Length: 221
Image (cartoon, rainbow, N blue to C red):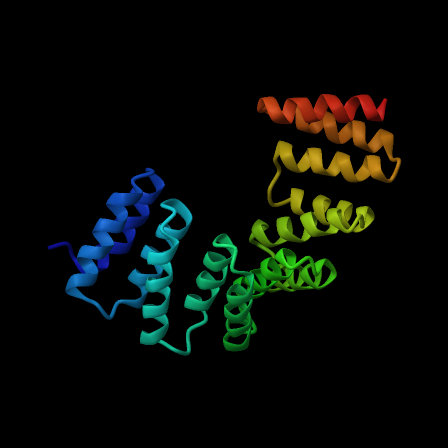
């Protein structure tokens, strides 16, 4: 029997290696021995939802974790994203609201809330929620990416440009440089857009990114 303290690190290693079923089996074996391990339920549920298209089983895991610790926001956070993947935006919304109520200072709760707002096309409110998440945890690019996507949809290109420039200090990538060029072109800043596209081209680009760079470069010129 594996030492209980080794289960989560081992499951993370298996997940990183793409061995999702093995990770779930490991967590399931551990839960048979320790059924009150809510942390294991959460990880198993997340892998089932995100990696194995087993949303129904994942929802059961999150529900069980919530029953073990009703004051925890985490089961509601993961439930909201899982129900979004199922297309059940109403239930997702309920869980996101509970997550924020239980943990108003948790950035991930506000991220889940923002995702639900985005799904329901309440984009201005979603931008505010993404911004709240980013303010609570500026170190995680996930929240700023969400904010940028919504700002672009809202055609708030100047705000999106500022957010991208800020994020580039944390997450320099070709796709982000391309998004920056898009916002600059929308503002008729052709020179700045060309510079951003040159920065993107300095990376090894996928075929899709290469096509975007060439397309935007033609527009800039």
